[in-house]
Each structure stands twice: as structure tokens, then as C-alpha cells.
Amino acid sequence: MSVTNCRVLIKFGGNSLNGPGDLDRFADNLLELIEKNYQPILVHGGGPEISKEMEDRGMIVKKVAGLRITDQEVLSVAEEVLKRINAATVAMLRAKGINAIGASAADAGVICKRKAPVIMIEDGIDVNVDLGHVGDVVGASSKWIEDMLNAESVPVIYPIGADPLGNKYNVNADTMAAFLAQAGGADTMILLTDVPGILRGGEGSSDVVHEVTFQGIDELINQGVITGGMIPKVEACRDAIRHHVATVHMLNGKDPNSIVRKLIGMEKIGTTVTQG
Ligand SMILES: Nc1ncnc2c1ncn2[C@@H]1O[C@H](COP(=O)(O)OP(=O)(O)OP(=O)(O)O)[C@@H](O)[C@H]1O
Ligand SMILES: [Mg+2]
Image (cartoon, rainbow, N blue to C red):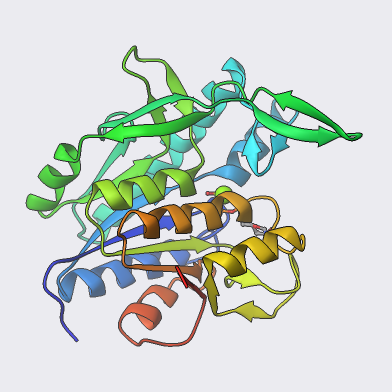
């Protein structure tokens, strides 16, 4: 099957694509997509690597609802680690003949603002938790992405955004991916993660939910099945669909061939989110 300039945003998480040869197979999948006229836009996270770097430096990792509490020091570590992952990914893709161009979300035209405190219930009392330098995306110019795609380049974006004053923010990579999918006019968004999709029995189970609606997501959150990093991920899926990204899949980044298996082979793998 060949398509006419189908834009696909692919986000990979810090724990996916880190097995031997994974990044190489990922690049082969991209080449196959490009051959079939797909235009990939890449976004990556780096959660586990940021946590490891923080622990190595004796810092304490704190997360609320899957989001990292980010003081100035954490922000510097996050930016440093994400830049390192970005440079390594770009170098690897270029070695495979893909014209990859790395950028922060700020450089790619994304505008952020500081995220409002999250309300948590502790001992029956509402508590405001300030997440620090964590950002919400409030807008983006699509010019940079358009220029990249018109030049047949593959953008590789890491989720550090900035406000109009230049203050930087750490943004969850799934949240950023959903925003860039709409700003970049993607028809399809794929979130590659370190699990094969939403697992019905929660973390550690092997029963994949292949299709889920918005309402089904609410039920799985209320049942405590969807927790931690899966929360911003499902919210990002809903956000992308609400903003006209037609197709949204979560796939296993431990099997980088899953991209071609899903988009071209149409295999029943991963989790597909629909409005319902
Ligand atoms: N029901 C569930 N099914 C599958 N995974 C779940 C579920 N509930 C919670 N999770 C957790 O969500 C994790 C995926 O989110 P996580 O934020 O850790 O990774 P990522 O988004 O792929 O990477 P990064 O945050 O680096 O971008 C899984 O590894 C798992 O621990
Ligand atoms: Mg995550």
C-alpha cells in the first residue's frame, strides 16, 4: 500500500527503543514508511534516563499523576538528558541516510506556560501540589515543522518548551506529542512505549486492550487500572483525537517493527483509541 503524503507523528518513550538494535530497527521502519510516502515527525521522552541521572546525582525523584515535580535543578538535568538522547537519535538516523533534524519544542515553535498546581486529596483534604517548572502547551507555530517536511527532513523534537519571555518548561512528552500532532497536521499519532498497549490487569499484566473509547478510558482510570505514566498518555490520545488527529495507536517500543506491522500490515497489535 502506498499513501499520499500521510503525516505520522511517532513518539517514543525513554524505556522504548533501548534494547540492542532497537533504534536500528526503528530507523528501518522509518525508511519503509518514507518509501511509502509517509512523512514522519518524531517526538521523544526520556523519563527513565532523567530519573537515573537524578539518582546518580543524589537527587530525589518525585512524581504526581505521572508528572515529574521539576525545580530549577531538575529542569537542568531533564534538559541535559533530553538533549543527549536527541543528539544520539539524530546521529543514528543520519547514519541510516535519514535527514533527521533535532530541536527542542521551544525551537520548533511551541509556546508554553507554567502548569497550574495539581489538586491531590490527602487524608480527605484537597492539597495543591506545585509541579514547579512543568509546562502546559498553549500554542505553536507550525512554520518550523512545515519547513522541515517541505525539505524532506524528519524533525526529531524533545519536550522542553518555553514561554514568550524565554522561561523554559519540562513538558510530558506524550502531552507534547499530541500537541505537535495537531500543529503538524498529522493524520496518525503513534505512541511507542515500553508495554504492548493498555494492559487490562494494570502494570505487569499481559492482557492488551486492543480498542478503547474515551468512556472506556475513564472507566479504566476509575478502576485504578490506568496509573502513573499511562495517565498523561491516554489524555494525550484523547487530546489528539479531539483536535482532529484521525488515528491514534499505542504500540510496543520493545518491538520497533510494530510501526510497520500496524500501519502497513494492519495487524491487530497495540491499543487503538477511538472517541466511541
Ligand atoms: N494499565 C496499564 N497498562 C500499561 N501500562 C501501564 C498501565 N498503568 C500504568 N502503566 C505504566 O505506564 C508506563 C508507560 O508510561 P511511561 O511514562 O513510564 O513511559 P513512556 O511515556 O513510554 O516514556 P517517557 O515518559 O520517557 O516518554 C508503563 O511502563 C507502565 O508502568
Ligand atoms: Mg511518559
